Length: 168
Image (cartoon, rainbow, N blue to C red; front, side, top):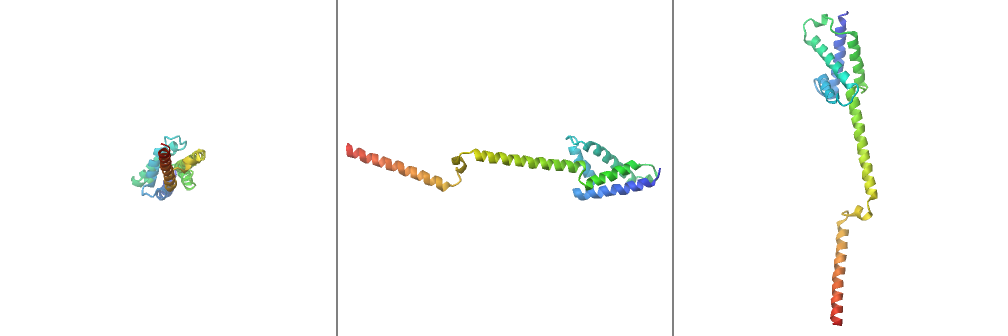
C-alpha cells in the first residue's frame, strides 16, 4: 500500500474540518457536526446513521494520524476512505448531507404548518358573524350604543310616570 494515502486522507479531512468549522461557527466543526447528527440519527433520517458511523471512524483515523507517532508510515487509510471523505465534502458543499437535508425538511414542515394555521384562522374569521368580528374593535361605538339604550330607558320611564300621573 502507498503510505502517501495517509497524507491524502489527512489533507482531505482538513477540508471537511474547515468547512464544518465555518458552517457551524465553532473550532471543532467535525465533532459538533457529529453531535448534531446524533440528535437526528434516530428520527427516520435514512442516511444519518451510516454517515454518523463513518464520520466517527474518519475522525478516529485523523486523530491517529495527527497524534500518533510514526502513523503516517503505517497502512491506516484506504483509497475508499479518501473517496468517502471527498464524497462527504461534496455533500457538505451542495447541502445534500444528512444534517442539511434534515434542516431543509424541518423548515418546509414549519412553513407548511404556519400556512395551514393561517388558512384555518382566515376560514374561522370568514365564518364569524359581523357582530362578533367587530366586537371590541371600537370601544366608542360600544359606549355610544350603551348611552342610547340608557337614555331610551330613562325617557320611557319618565313618559310612563307622566302618563300615570295624568290618568290617575
